Image (cartoon, rainbow, N blue to C red; front, side):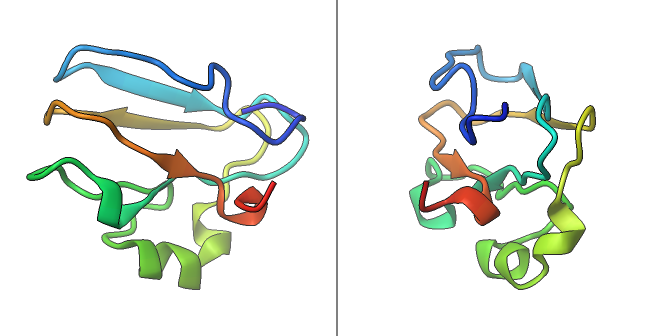
Amino acid sequence: MNGAQRFEPAQITIPAGDTLVFRNASGEAHTVTAYEDELPEGAEYFASGGFSSESAARDNVGDGLLTEGQTFRLTLDTPGTYRYFCIPHEQQ
């Protein structure tokens, strides 16, 4: 994540079972939030803050914020395409 309010790289491919590390490199707080209805079949929901659903992440944004330099680690065991966003900057 960077100051331009986007994830960099915009797209990444990793093998199933690998761990992805999101690092906030900007001065703004951000979340890493999965679009729950777009997860691959059988995949577990994820969001910074450890929420179990997209609605819980949206209802408790402050608990999922990553400040500059903080990281969120995510291991993706189920193959497929995962879409995610930052709640405060979703419309940008």
